[in-house]
Length: 217
Ligand code: DC
Image (spheres, rainbow, N blue to C red):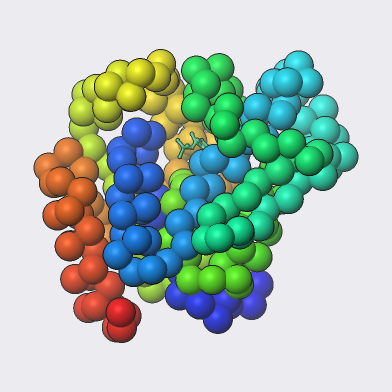
């Protein structure tokens, strides 16, 4: 893969660790585009669930995904994600998707397609991209990497406050133990504990780190 011309900031971390709030806020501070790759895996899961596909059936999932028109683009500085012309993003926080997404995300055909689209998005604009494998697989070459985590109790509480039922420990386990692109902290990522800091503090720490890595902003 050739390098995008724009800087890429990679943010990975555990479920409900506050990645989205942190990533969105950092993107806003820098004037970068925020890209939530979890929403793409969730969108694919929604599509498969709509079609009543067994998410554990690798062959059928692969066939469905290869036959679908999946499109990612940026519009007005935001990710637009469509499958067969439909926008799954309004549905992706449903409890059913929390329960199924880590299964769909294990399927190599799903990862291959979404990783390629994520790499293409970063050619269009400077991005802050959050997910599970951004610093390790999607953009291993970027010098700008963060890994967010917090105590499991704090993360579970966060989801409850958001009014969601989420199987965060189960998802983490599946995401960490899967064969392809497992969730892991890149050796060159800065680890941040979102249970100990406010979003403003995390962004300030991130900006300081980016400056120390040579980023001019
Ligand atoms: O960030 P999130 O909780 O919305 O992500 C939902 C799931 O999608 C996560 O449990 C695993 C999968 N995912 C992934 O495998 N790789 C990514 N880059 C982003 C998300």
